[in-house]
Length: 115
Image 1 (cartoon, rainbow, N blue to C red):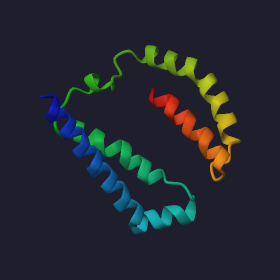
Image 2: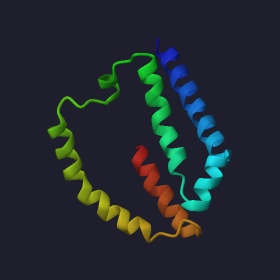
Image 3: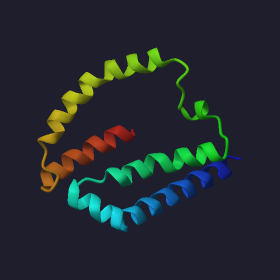
Image 4: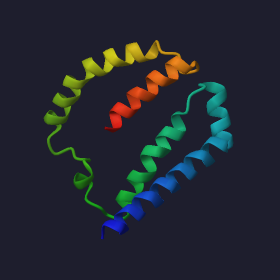
């Protein structure tokens, strides 16, 4: 059963990446890069497509951590987390990822997130 779950996750992730790349290569993606220079539509696809798969397969969203049953709890967690996240983002925005030193700093931050 665990192997099936891993295969499903890998397939959905692969399809999501493929769809995001196709959207990025489409005229919509070209328009988006001309207008905003960011990848909002690709990010929206990365969120909406897996959610759509969960809805189509009628999975229990709460078992995936998606629930609005106790909004006060979720809002309190967000309110507590926003200050340290905002402070961290200010410092990380000063790091130039195009230089080796900045790339190493951001890599270290990402590896810390994984562990």
